[in-house]
Amino acid sequence: MNKLYVGNLSPLVTVEDLKQLFGEKKLPGADQVLLKSGYAFVDFPDQNWAIKAIETLSGKVELHGKVLEVDYSVPKKLR
Image (cartoon, rainbow, N blue to C red; front, top):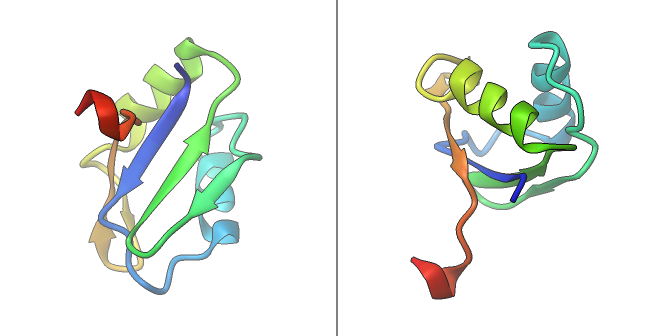
């Protein structure tokens, strides 16, 4: 599973903001971004890049005044 949940997003965040952030952090594969209100889902090409994204971003990066929370996306039925 290489889909990540990106939470604690400001209402000002756009898909382009997220793609730019992933690009700046040299994290490939942020082509598939599904932005919702306050959170997003991002697909990564493999598990290694997903792990690197979590380690690089979660609790460490601020976007539009909010610190991002990044973790694996878990389907509702498995929560």
